[in-house]
Image 1 (cartoon, rainbow, N blue to C red):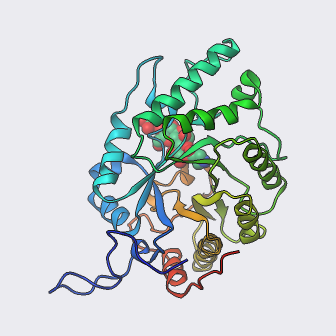
Image 2 (cartoon, protein in one colour; image 1 turned 30 degrees about the horizontal axis):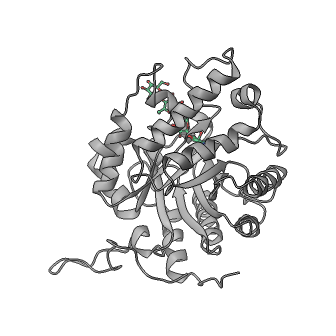
Length: 343
Ligand code: G3I
């Protein structure tokens, strides 16, 4: 990996003449071949200047946190609503940010009007229509898609879901093929949680990706969500990412956050910082790690508070948008990183 900066990225520490030098940001220290992204709330991006300024100075990519989910895009059969997704994607593009699409097929995000009692043909046709319409709309504007999300159970077997029950295991290959037909240039990812370290589930994912690739299915990358807890590191994250890369796919950290058991303390913030740094180091150690994305960048709007009672403070910035030790640790890692030798 070279230390080159990407197009449109400022020289670290250099400001327009007559101004005080700008502090380096994550965005301008990141190697050019790795995107640094954040999951975003489109309403805050459009309406909150402080949110927007931090987002655009530290990140050169965004993942719509919810705006591309199927129930939002198609609240009723045949009625699409692109308002939120169009606005977010145009804002990101206007700010020089690449967009990572999340997510086309997720058991937890199926419109209520889709019925499991439908025939196999009808279910398959509605899924294909959703995938192809959505990918076609954003062809050339979304660089990568989570085509399938969380298709595995903890034991590494395919998760029991409406799609597995209704269509059988081939729905996964079908979804990739439909997405590829709709945008042959988009990078197509399989994304999951609990797979960033070596585990039974990660082994199952490894086998699945190997099989799909052997069948010629256009799976280009594996996304490792990485919803972590301060003080608990994944088992050999670097080795795990490397074994996937050896299958010929790209890898990406797609949803990193590190929750803290409340109350927050200095020690816990440092544990959190170490884990953020650890995951960035793992990504940068793999030449085909294409992006490093955090799931929200401010504690003010992180999903953790509502989903994990007793936990919080999972992001790089606190609720007042002050940078936390975790952000300093990422900056430090970027300044001092060792360039890996290609394996
Ligand atoms: O926007 C509505 C609001 O109008 C309504 O009043 C309120 C009442 O519940 O709900 C709001 O929508 C919520 C939405 O987040 C926006 O805040 C939904 O209920 C809530 O279910 C939704 O949660 C999202 C969750 O996925 C489910 O889609 C989280 O924000 C989002 O962070 C989370 O992201 C997932 C990834 O997609 C997949 N990987 C795991 C990750 C964390 O769970």
